Amino acid sequence: MRFVHLHGEPDLLRERLAARRGHYMPPSLLQSQLDTLQPPGADEHALTLDIGRPAQAMVADAERWLRQP
Image (cartoon, rainbow, N blue to C red):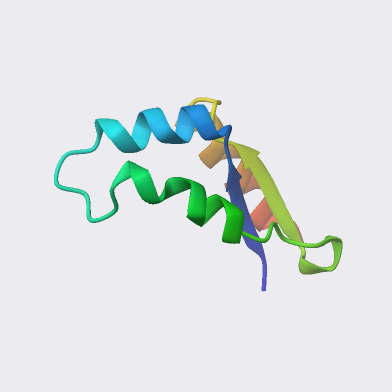
């Protein structure tokens, strides 16, 4: 099993969350979610991608990484 972990700065996450309309999670809950999140450990075979990058670049990186044996 492999994980693709999307990481982002809290301000960017807050901005994107606030821009969503009709989303189930209000921006006021973001900090509690970040406090609870446990990033993958070294033994969990994860790729961490910065969400500040363009989506197409992240998808390309993830696809390339997932194709590796």
